[in-house]
Each structure stands twice: as structure tokens, then as C-alpha cells.
Amino acid sequence: MRLVRSNIASLEPYSTARDEYKGNLGILLDANENPFGGGLNRYPSTTLRDSLVAKLAEIKGVLPGQLFLGNGSDECIDLCYRVFCRPGKDNAVMISPSYGMYKVCADINDVEARQVKLGKDFSLPVEDLLAASDNNSRLLFICSPNNPTANSFPESQIRTLLDEFPGIVVLDEAYADFSARGSLKKLLEEYPRLIILQTLSKAWGMAGLRLGMALADSAVVRLFNRVRYPYNIGTDTLQLALELLPKSYVESKVSIIVKERERVRAALAEIPTIREVLPSDANFFLIRTDCPRCLYNFLLSRGIIVRDRSNTPLCGPALRLTIGNPGENDKLIKAITEYDSIQSTIH
Ligand SMILES: *Cc1c(COP(=O)(O)O)cnc(C)c1O
Image 1 (cartoon, helix red, strand yellow):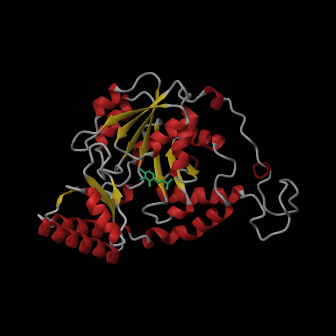
Image 2 (cartoon, rainbow, N blue to C red):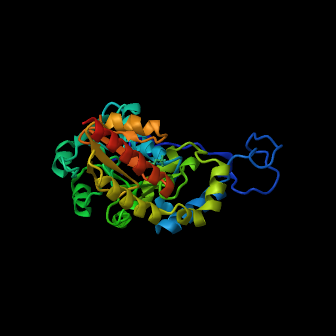
Image 3 (cartoon, protein in one colour):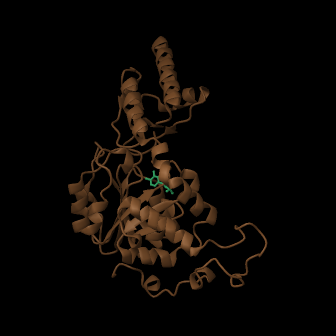
């Protein structure tokens, strides 16, 4: 692949004891482990990792070779830079506002981050993104549904970018399970330069486990596996994920969250102090009000913590609200109603 850094293409990866001998049986004197202990004294087994990869690939409808398992999607984002971008030379193009890690990882890897503003209506600036790209543009980050704007971008526009952007297109689908359209992973068949990021942190309700995925061409997955830390996922995490996966999606109640999202949006739309309630394809949405900080502090005084997005380009003056459980959402609506009545008494 022409886009891969040459030092990565020619990398001789570290070969672990568990790579060289994959079994668990026998007297293991190969890895300088401590022989005492109930299991966690051993390095994670490759077989266990492979089982989780196989399970997730089955769920996602891809081949195991097309799925990379990372320590959260954040690891996958960092690997995109380490595999494809020459520090000090290459650049990454990204939409703004969007998820902060794309730029942080660019900065850490000494790669220029070219941030391109969304349209005023949060539309995808296809022409501007292409105009910002040059021969050293190796990555294009698109988050859909986008954090923090909560909107999805049309498939046709993503296809245009895949056709015309000269590097790797990274489509972050952390919130796709909350959207009506769902994932665009079918595009992987057509576009070997597409990497789709998904995570167990949101719809699957397992943010504490730290597991994220890159769905991609098998050549990309092989590269990621050569560059990642040899044991990037611990034994307990692998075991817990295998145990919890069969029912965690159902128990994370995505459909209830989507229903609650529309209920809370409708309730807040009735409150005069809330000037605007933005639409959402995710498990959060933006609201606009004259003094977001005042509302933020008021909610804090009621024990409710939200995210102030006033300083985010195009968003402000806005707060970002995550959908909680029905009881929590009721308390949010009640608190904002109370804030509104205080406001109307003052003015
Ligand atoms: C929350 C989130 C993620 C998830 O990151 P993990 O490291 O998998 O927890 C990825 N992308 C976006 C846009 C997010 O908001």
C-alpha cells in the first residue's frame, strides 16, 4: 500500500512468547511470568483474543481479518497516524467541530491537523475538505453521526470523499447504532481506503472495558496488528467482553435511549428559555440558550452535569446533553423548567 510509512511497511514486529506458542497447556517457562497466581499471572492468550475478534466479526458481519481490536477507538485513531503519517511531513484533514481526539493524536504524532469548518447547518463541507487536501494528506476524519453536532452525513457525500480524497478516509461510527441509517460498513466492499471505527463504549454500554474496533481492508488490519502494543487488551477485559457481549447490546437499551431522546427533545422544545433544540442521530443533542453557562451552573446546583459547548465553533451558545435513564431525564426536564420560571420572573 503506497500510503503506508516505509518504516512501518518494513517493520519486523515484536514476536511475543504467546505468538510463538499459542497453547495454554503444558509447563509454561517461556515468558518470564510468575508461576504463582490464578490466571492473571499469565500474559493474555492469543487464542482468547482471536475468539473475541471472531465473535465481534460475526456480530458486525465482516471477516475476522477485517476487524482490528483496540484499547478503545482512541487506540485505533492513534494507530491511523502511526501507520500512515510521516511526522513533520504529512497532514490529516478533519471536520470541525468534531471529536477532539483526531487533533490531539495529530499533535502528539507531529502531524499537521487541517480543520475544515462544517457548514452553518452542520453540513459536510465536501468541496472545502477536498480543497484542503494535497499530496501529503494521508488521513481524512469524518465522524457520523458527528460529536458534538449529533447529525449524520449523507452516504452520497461520503462516497464522493472516498472517490476523490487521495488518502485514507476514517469514518467514525461511534454513535451509528442510535441513528436510523445505521452503519455504512457495506462501503468496505468497494473502498479499500476506508477505515470504519466502532466502539463498545456507547450503544454497547461498556465504556469501562476500553474496547474499540477498526473495520477495514485486511491489509490495514494486519498493519495495525503489527504496530499495536503486543498485549494491548488484558485477559480480564477479553474474558469479560466474551461473557457480556451476547446480552449487553440488549441490556444497554438502545431503543429506549432513542425514544427518550425524542421525549426529552420534545419537552425542552416547549420551554421558552431554550431557544433551540437541535435534532439528533445520537445519544446526545445540543440546546441553544442565551446564557449556557448560567444554565450549566444551575443544573450543577441541582446535581446534573452536562457539557458546555459554548466555545466550540458553530455550536455556541450551546450545551450538550447526554440522554440518561427515564428518571434522570425527568429530573433534567424538571430542573430546566424551574430555571425557565426563574428566568421569566427576573425578566
Ligand atoms: C465516545 C467516542 C468514541 C469512543 O472512544 P472509545 O475510545 O472507544 O471509548 C469514539 N469516537 C467518538 C466520536 C466518540 O464520541
